[in-house]
Length: 364
Image (cartoon, rainbow, N blue to C red):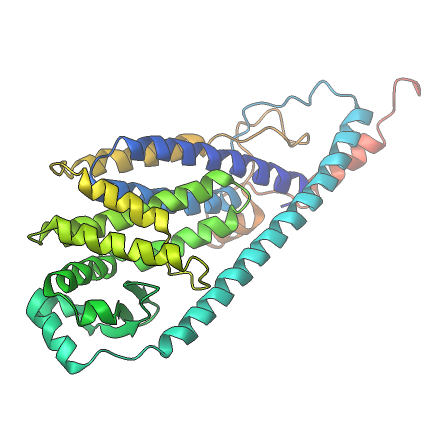
């Protein structure tokens, strides 16, 4: 991939990602079910990664070429400007990716080291948990879940790298039985629905597209959707929604009193408030089949947008509707004896050479 193709990929993928994000936000707003909302965002992030891979590995649509009317001199100038722009944009993008990657890795190491220092719950607390939620909820795919005591400021949360872990403040672990049941159901639902893995995929997309504000907005909506799913699970098997609301508001108040926490698992006060308001206004649950059409809409939008490529490359062939295959994917196809037209690595150089030595009108 030369600099002209790279510039086309970066600009087009940014446009595609923005359009898919806006469309997904609109689709998600039409979903009433918390499960449907969460499924929409999971599908969205998988489509974003697929779109990124397709842009690097598959041919691109070449539906127009606005550069045909330029003279050779002007075309060479456009090529030079785009080569400089591609180098600058790539450098800025890689710098941003490096900064956010270091940020996530540093946060992971800090959190991992901190969590190791949290003590495990006592056997008496484990017995209480078995009583309130049942033995089957205390394991995940045959693996036991580790339960630890977290600081009060952080509230309850779950974590999974290799081993699933649930962290409970002492006030919850040794407090009211109904509150313990609701909090446990909430955190265990996070683990059973693979929310930690979904958050990991979300972080990858946010790192790749750090320069698009809508992607960060989508991340906040996706996080809220996952919390809504777990809130519904906690309240659905509980006798009292009011007690769960009191629990949320209590932790929201603690977060507002200690807003300067360095650990990334601490939830914001506004998030607690939105969740509490939703539960207070919650009516009857909507049907879950809505998630099927919502996911289908996201996939269809992604497929349509994937064909939207900006005609920025002045050296694209005006006779072909699709570009040749990228060299690395064409090489894989060739190993399986599959015919695929790939980029000639000298093609752009030859075109520039021909333009440079093409006689101008004054020479004639």
